Image (tube, rainbow, N blue to C red; front, side, top):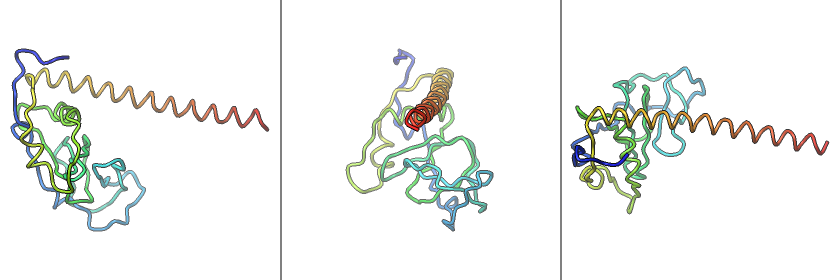
Length: 173
């Protein structure tokens, strides 16, 4: 899908608000492996560090967690706690779909150029093209479906790798 005449240019700060994570930071890092508890998140590759039963959970709906130093970000549609104050919690302003905005932020191919906080000075002013809210929702649902399909295909590839390893072991018994 390419931008059309009805797409409007906005700065990222016109589409998203941010919240500092101070009240959602875990006090203890002795995480549990019990996935029925609240996940503790980081925006980098680890994403879920473990689980906690601590209070003070972020539960305002879907958001983006954005690492101010590495510029990594994750879409989060569930309640959570965080480990670091370097994370910004991004929420969509009225008229903007949070999942669509996540895909836009990911498409910017951001990379840090110094060890500093980047979101306010470097990311918020970036100009982006945004369609109507209805089109944002359609695009967001498409990307959700693609992500679900990719997850299924990755699981299938993992199972095939295990089957191949099993067969190879059986050949040389």
